[in-house]
Image (cartoon, rainbow over all chains, first blue to last red; front, side):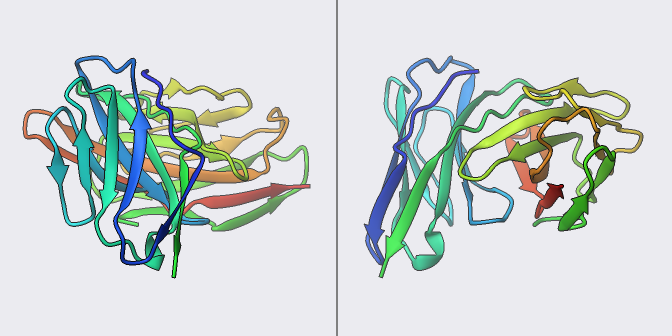
Amino acid sequence: DAKTTQPTSMDCAEGRAANLPCNHSTISGNEYVYWYRQIHSQGPQYIIHGLKNNETNEMASLIITEDRKSSTLILPHATLRDTAVYYCIVRPILRGAQKLVFGQGTRLTINP
Amino acid sequence: DGGITQSPKYLFRKEGQNVTLSCEQNLNHDAMYWYRQDPGQGLRLIYYSQIVNDFQKGDIAEGYSVSREKKESFPLTVTSAQKNPTAFYLCASILDNADRGTYEQYFGPGTRLTVT
């Protein structure tokens, strides 16, 4: 599996956009980028995923660079409830169960 | 937590005892996973299963066993051979339909196991 690199921690002011970077320089052509988050002592929550085009849903936007070696998760108007650990992972688009390898993620703190 | 249940939420056992953690889903997902999380750490994969009666070892399978007799259920047994079983255990399921471009994944609420 391609590995990802994320900053250990980030801070963001409430109401501002939170931009979380992720490097995945060894990503293969058949691998998607996925983002999850985990609020303390709860199971991780799926946020968004993409292959090469930018994606947006009700939770966030995902910007993937043209060479696909990095991506940015954007929370457009961060709230205190967005404080969590955010995980960026890559996995193949092949059908069937694939290993999901979670690193240590980025601990995002939203400050009032 | 989207139709995945894990029970109990907290579990206490004495060292040397086997213990089975429950994971049930009513989402009709084919793939199910078990992860372990230690304080301040990311998730580590223990076992995963693509279909009924089939499962594969993850990165830290030693000291654990699983079964997948039904699509809805994927119980994890922590055996006495697991050297450091105290941890937060998470179960997940995935529906991944590349043909339809759909992807669903849900994690359960987790079971915090303490072995003394």
